[in-house]
Image 1 (tube, one colour):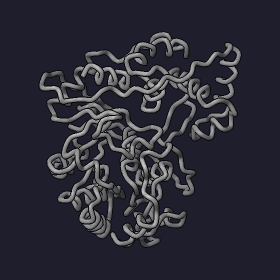
Image 2 (spheres, one colour):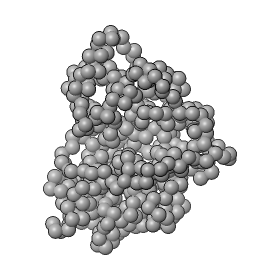
Image 3 (cartoon, rainbow, N blue to C red):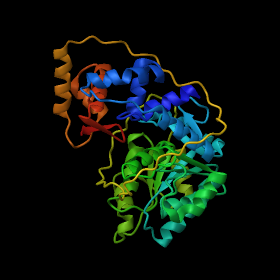
Image 4 (spheres, helix red, strand yellow):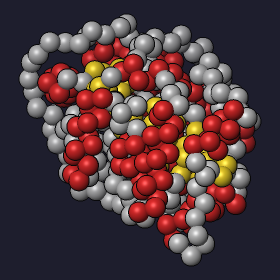
Length: 399
């Protein structure tokens, strides 16, 4: 458990997100070594007052998770979802509660509008039930509207809710009933600590997990500017299938789906269409090299509705510690030797090619015509110094 706590402490340290976490592990070989080196890495990036996450914060989070009956699952654990290994920004640690065997099934995501029509809700509920009967687990984000309907339709066959806040934080409150039913028969998943209230920035992070867990994402209803289209965009970036249900051109709740269909998404009229589309495409393999599919669908996106700007401190406590496996360790990268002028020149060139508009990291590396490991090291330094920010989907932008 000490090793798992070390991983969590590294992940909860300032400016260490999922991608940075993995790069630190790659460079230093273990979470303990990365944690020890982190202050020096920050100083090299010009951050003189950097402090790693205090041990008491991690102890409180672990205690809160134990009391809630949740399991902290790490990359390498048997319960870690296999398809998430294919994501460049896969969550290193996940809090999970429920029937973890459900994660071994083939999974499909169903997402859509919060202010869905009655027909849309009925369609999502029926589609989820029929796909569940075919052996699929249904993934969604427990939002009001289409998400909730999809969970309801699959509650008997198996459904997974990915939460934007902590596992013990129900949002929205109107979904309290379905939340407790999923906790009993399905799986609740979150990468946030117990007690965390959802911020607006947590919803795009949640969406990448919803699409990343699944072989395909099905959009039932979505406006032209909606979080559901963000999830569809994540699915494209992750090399997954995108399917959409058509709607009337005069219905604003169908405009996003109609745009997806115009730009190449598979048209869905029912479960049979989904099964036929899946049969015509090769299954997603978790063992293939991680990649980014080129986004073909150009969709105007806006962030989900803002959430209350407040946090909750996980309470302290004691209790039995769940069994864990060995920590994730990766071989260290080959050290590189560069002069200060080379170091500064690469920093300058990276910053000159970035703007407030997000750019794929792979595209930046190709444009720089420099070794990938050197560019990755400089990106980590710039991220720790606050000069650049990572976005979901492997994107980079100036802070």
